[in-house]
Length: 271
Image (cartoon, rainbow, N blue to C red; front, top):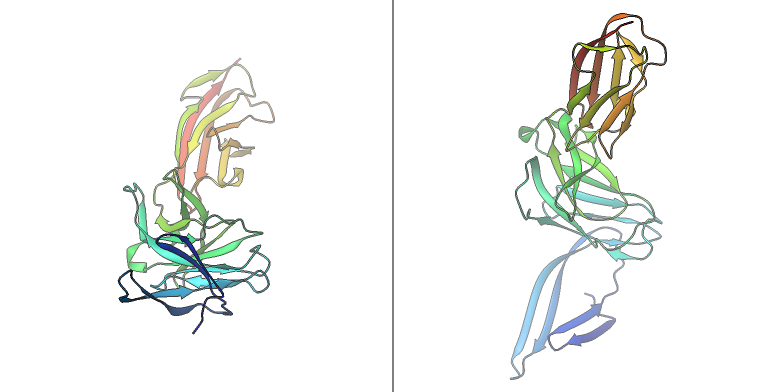
């Protein structure tokens, strides 16, 4: 049993208490509150709580009640000792993407971290294709931000690293990226022998990681891709003069979980 080392009344119906905990592992405990009402009647409240202390010196971890969500924090990541909690959360509105399992809220969400904490969520293989799963943060604006997709298929876990605590879920992304507004269009004729190639490339879930996820070739020869994720604009230009005649352009794009889109066009270089 622990008695509070500090008890303070903050208003007519609210109290604030500090308890001394020295726990290196999460522990299920019961909060017991006793008192009297204005008529002298005895009152008692018992409420189960999970205590998951994370300290600056030792770090710590916390888990959800259903055992499917876990947070691990290494030493020196928190600036002061905190009690971590993980609770299920309901979406305020529907999602156009497939959420696998539950959404979990990790608190406190207002503290900065001096490095990365690891978030891990379990999945059931019947629900999804594990290779298409990733861990996402549900932002305050209501959209999903990709956190990571480190897959442990043996234990059915997907993990990622975060610099602050928020709400998280596993989403399955089976839709490939979109490649549109490709220039040149089919049959375009250029007089310049180093024409600019442009396209709009976007993916609304796992995203395009970097230029390494984009392949552009002309007649099978690799071109240097330049991709701006803010504007979704992809550009390239041959580094050597193309020969006169017909040429084939190939654009291939892979998103964060391996979905691939391809587009082909042909154009001409003329005198």
